Image (cartoon, rainbow, N blue to C red; front, side):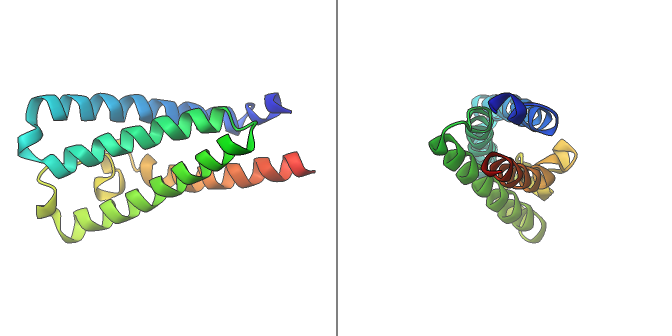
Length: 134
């Protein structure tokens, strides 16, 4: 059954999460090392996003266990809340950030993938759970 979960859309979803994890990790590392004092909130949020993407990637890939499934759900829900809160705040109070983060303006720097991905992740977690139950 686990092979079916990692086929098709599941495989693509995990790959996109992995790419975002790598991109967000690299971006936050460079930002924190080179210019942390310029925008500490934005760069900390980028690092938080990187950790969330790493956790989501690993948990989605390992969702054979109920624990991994719960971790994936928590990570994706946290990601959704983060992108909605940070995206909204970056529009209504841009002075809070100083520089863009991964989730600023709902992920515009990442082609809005951060705004769409958690919805796809939640859908896939639900759909794969229904397939397992059937």
